[in-house]
Length: 133
Image 1 (cartoon, rainbow, N blue to C red):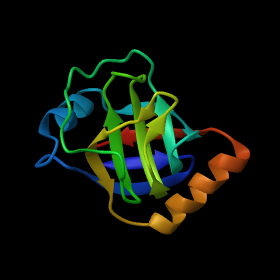
Image 2 (cartoon, helix red, strand yellow):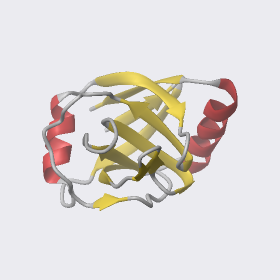
Image 3 (cartoon, rainbow, N blue to C red):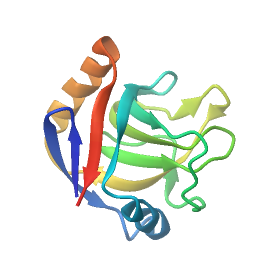
Image 4 (cartoon, helix red, strand yellow):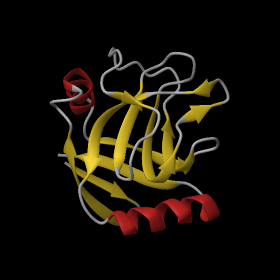
């Protein structure tokens, strides 16, 4: 899989052994395009707010503390549906408190560039993102 943020492309893998239902549900909506914004409560990450979008999955390999490059899907619950991408230290949270998202993908290279994009998103605003095969 490729994750393209602005003009930067990142190789990524689906974590099918850990989150098979989430990976299948997300693969069904690819290519997936949106915008990332910087997280508000979680630390060093970017997110895609998805409102009421329903991937019809429960919790799989859920974590509130993703490592840099890990991509999480939070199925709707106490907060809206969202995708989070960690570029540094993250404690996944919302105004409702700590959240745990399904670790369904991992960026496999160029994490320093991911950090630069994350910091740029904090200071300069939203960026386009595309997930594709």
